[in-house]
Image (tube, rainbow, N blue to C red; front, top):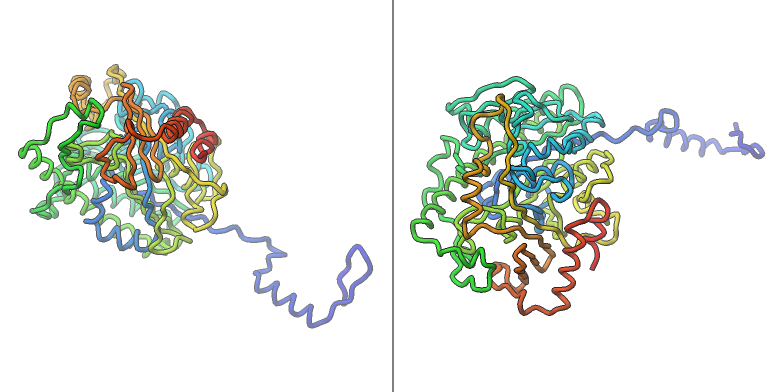
Length: 517
């Protein structure tokens, strides 16, 4: 027997023919039926609110089920340490100067700005939805939602939508969810506790996706441990003696080298310290329901046979300071407590107990999700996929990011006018109204606008006042000694040049600017 080619007939040994047939069968007959596409991966994205890196120490299930089974990022940062700008960045993969969402409200931030600018038309939800994924957002969306869009509004790209439209979701009780256009009220009973409700809905969605045999993307946006950090009743008495960590920068005594806004802040009094400790205990308690939710969702995935094909990504929208640099509690500064957040990932191809030291940030989340789903992302994206780091492959570029942009903008006090069907009570605990915004902006310990960069070694910040901060984090990880006045001019010039390129970058230009020496 012979195979015909364009040339002369070729005689084939029967043994060779037999081997070829065996290989063909073992390969699943690919030459006849075509190569089967790889099975799409599921993605479960769990975003907490105001979580400090150190507080994951009280979450044993997170550590056992995600960190120990996957990768932990040592240098993961948020570009703006504030809820709404960070969340817009997570959805779009852009720095805030490109999303246009720079604050939590007013004319330069919040849901109303995002909605008016049309950035919801192209997000990781629309990219994955258009590729056949079942998508769900459960929990907190953008600060100020739904405002003038109306309580039944569901943004593009989401198959399942369960997000608060009325009430006080930050307290975890007495809120109303927009459940795919239907308003469902939750009260003050134990079964109404927000974190539990959101976790239950996520588990139901994941199970439904398993029945349909479709890949899913779940964005589970929990309110804990944001103030008031209300714990579930079953956790209300835990950690009775816990105190906020007395880090080296706790109630910093000498702030003479700090910018004026911080030099004017008083030392915390014993009474203020007690208040900080009380908040810290509530935060730890509120995280216990989050930890339980992680265990519930992992168990759901395992029961459904989905766990091996699912990436689970855990992080926070920003960090939180508790007494560092004499600042009682809050965020929005460029200090480590506010910008440095946890990122833990488990999933297919991610080795257990991996530590990633490369610089990464929330601008990378959307392109990473797209890459893991084998979906192209638009050219407007500023970030980069972290998949090469997760899978221990060489990045597409031989170089990796050397600097990450950190910023803060002042919020405009001119807020949009809400329609009559908007919530009567503010849904955003961080932007309660114009009067509170004016009081807050007038406070001495409230940071002015700044732009800065975080490298593996340095934090460099330029304030709108003309003041600068520079910290050598190898020698001074607590950021006690601002060396901007004494550092080598060459170093300052290099950092300033990097910052100048990054704060106006767009798309691939951001990645180029981040990689330059």
